[in-house]
Image (cartoon, rainbow, N blue to C red; front, side):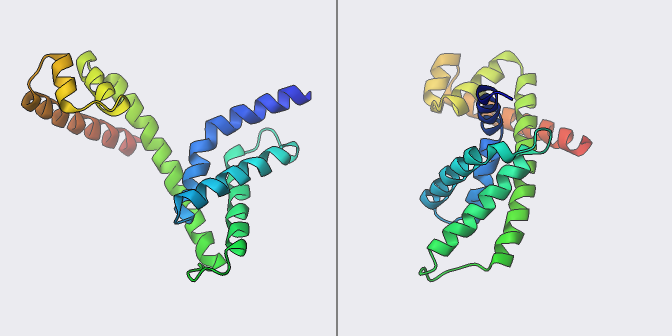
Length: 172
């Protein structure tokens, strides 16, 4: 495969699974700054060794394995710190993080599906509140409601979304 195609393939796969790999590392590393450094190093290692990745296999599993080894390497560099977890403990945490990451990603996709099913103004209110980060007062002005009414609507929308997500996850 030409180098350009492999580069594009890597970028697409990394973009698709980057959040899950990051979550996986952040579960194992207590400090966000350290986790971010490990994630960046893991991405470099992934890129350097992408020629060894076998197309058709799980990129996420491959990326998690590299990230896990970067966490171990980081731990070795930080041996002087007082609190150190055993490799066995980190292996268990890594497995739990993998399971949690998969489940959280499934919940995120399900929530997105449920938001798409909301009626127009309810979807708009969710967009304004959680994607644009607007406060209740600003949203109430935009949708021509009182703040009290908007709080009640948000509460009902959250309940609908919770029920929708719970039902869909129980089916799968």
